[in-house]
Image (cartoon, rainbow, N blue to C red; front, side, top):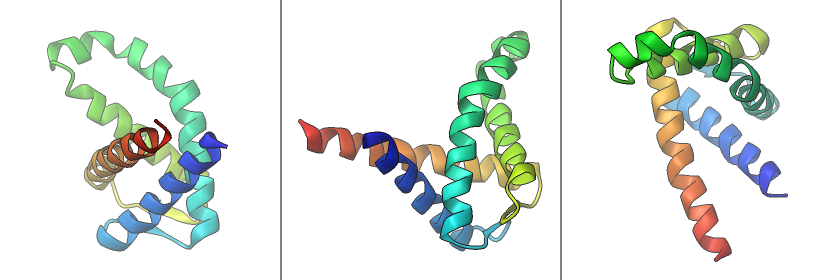
Length: 115
């Protein structure tokens, strides 16, 4: 049940960010839910592989390359989901950064309410 709630929170953030950012768009709730599912799957499968392959670059950049990895995950979701569009790497970086901040804050509130 908590997983479904987190997916819906992520979908709501995707909708919100697509309304705020001019470089990102989505066609509606169903595509946002699909984006949330695809991001979950990509973060579970592809992201660890990218982190291992780019570990030396991540060390040299003191972890800042992780922003690029997150943007690549967003661009992969853009490629996989038809109703979701991000216009380039910079918008993907901004989108992933704002999505991560929003998810972190809302998930922390969600976990606090259960205590």
